[in-house]
Image (cartoon, rainbow over all chains, first blue to last red; front, side, top):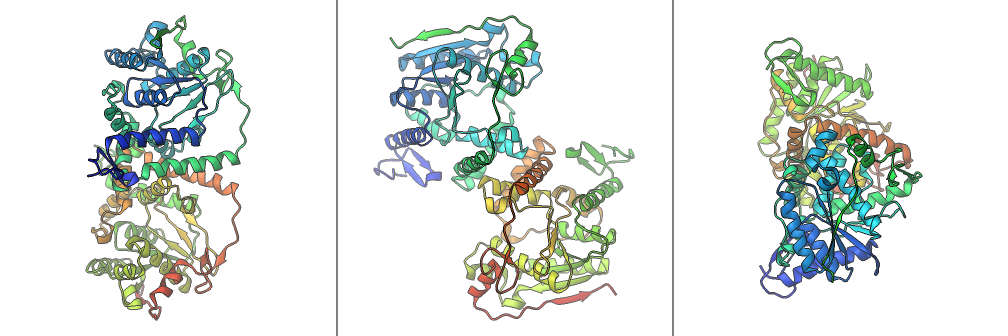
Length: 311
Length: 311
C-alpha cells in the first residue's frame, strides 16, 4: 500500500476518501480538514481566546495539539471527576502534555468542591452516571470559560461521537435534543460561551491514528463507567455499516447538518430564559445543574487550580 | 416460563411488551394487534375488496390467513419473478395455501410477459436487482388491483422491514423517500390502489412465530439475490439494539409516524402528475416502470392467470 500523494509507504488507508497516505501526508490531511472545518463553519477568528476541555484522551489532546500548532494558543481545562485511579492517571497525562505545549491549564475537581466524585454524586442524585457527568461537565466548562473570559470553548467530539448520539436521538425521536447538535453553538453573551467541535467531521479512527503518529502521549483507557453505555453499541454498529459502505458516517452527519439548516429556517427561536441561580440559559426557572446541586444539600465553594506552564 | 394470562406453559416471550404468552393467547394477541391497526389507521372498511400480494413467505401468507379469518375475503396475487427454482417453490406454497383458504389467486409471470426473469431484466436495464424488482412489483401489483377492481392492496411488510428501510433513509437522509413511508397510502382513484400494511407494527419474529404456531406452510428460503443486501445488515443491527433495549423498534417507528404527521401538516401536497403511458402517478412525464420497459425494447403483452379455488 503506497501513499497516493508521494508513493512512499502508506501509513493508513482511508476508505471513506478512497485513498491511502503516508505519515506526513496523513498528518497534514487531518490538520487541513480541521483548519477547513474551522474556516468553513466560522469556528474561530484570529485573536479568539480559546479554552480546550481535555480529558487526557486522544481526541482532546490532539485538538489541543492542533490548535496550538495553528497559533490559537488555547488554555486547557481538566475536570477531575474523582474516578478511582482513572482520574489521576488522566490528570498526569494532561499535566505532562500542558508542559510540553507550554500552556496554561485549569484543573477543577468534583471531590474538592463537593467532597464527592461523580459516581457518588450520581448515586445521591439518583441519576445515571453518564447523565450526571454530562450535566456537571457542561456546567463547569461553561463557568470556567466565562470566569476566565475565554470566549470559545472547544471540545474534542469526533464524527463517531456525533453520529452515535445522532442515531440514539433518531431511534427514539428525541425532538428536544435532535436539532441541537452542531459544529458550533453560538455564544449567549454573559451567559454561555461559544462552543465549537473542530473534529466534528473526523472519525475516531483517524484521530487515534493522528495522535499515535504525532507521538501524543494520551490515556488509552476508556472511562470505567462507560462500559455497556448505549453510545458504545451505536458506535460499533455504525462502524459495521461504515465497513460495508465507507463514507456512511460522513454522509449521515452532513445530511443531518443540511436538514438542520432547513429545520432552523422553518422555526422561530423562542425567547431564551436564564437560570435564576447561575444565570445560564435554562428551560425552567432553574437550570438542571442548579436543581441538582440544590438537591445535594452540600454547601460548596467553587474553586479550581491554575497550572501555568506558559512562562 | 408461564403465560401471563392463563398460567399455562408459555410459547413465546415478548420482551418489548414485557410479557410471555401461551400459543392460544399469543395467536389472539397478534390478531388483535392486526385488527386494532386496521381500525386505528383506517386501513379497511367492511365490504372493501382486497388484493393481498403474496410471495409464499411467512409474512404474506400470515396476512392472507388473518384477513380471511376476519372476513375480508381477500384475493391473492403472486408475482413470478422467474428466479431459478426459488420462484417455482414459492408458487407451490402459494397455490396450496390458496386452495386451503378457498380463495382466488392471480399469477403474473415476468418470463411470460417479457421472456426474461428479474435477474436478466435487471442486467439488461443495468439496475441493481432489488431496485428493478421493486419497480416491477409495484407496477404489477397496482395494475392488477386496478384491472380486477380490487381497490385495496395489502402487503405483508412488517416492523423489521419498515425500521430497516427507515434507518437506511435516515443514514443517507433520502428526503425523497423519507417521508413517504406509512401504514396506509391513499388511493388515487383510477390511477393507484390504496396500499395498506397491516403488519406495520408487528415484528418479523412475532410473525414467524405466528405462522409457525398457526401451522401455515410457508417458504423458509430468502430470495437468493437478497444476500448481502443492506436491509439485511440493518435488520440485524436493529435487532441487536432491540436485544439490549426491548421496544426500540416500535418506538423508532411510532416516533417516525408522529414526526411524519407534523411534516405533512407543514407541507403542501404538490399537484400529482400522471405517466403519459400508463396513467399512474409519476414525477416525470413517464413513470419509472414505463421508462424502463421502453428501454427494454421488447414488445410485450400483459397477461396473467387466474386460479379460482373459491368455488
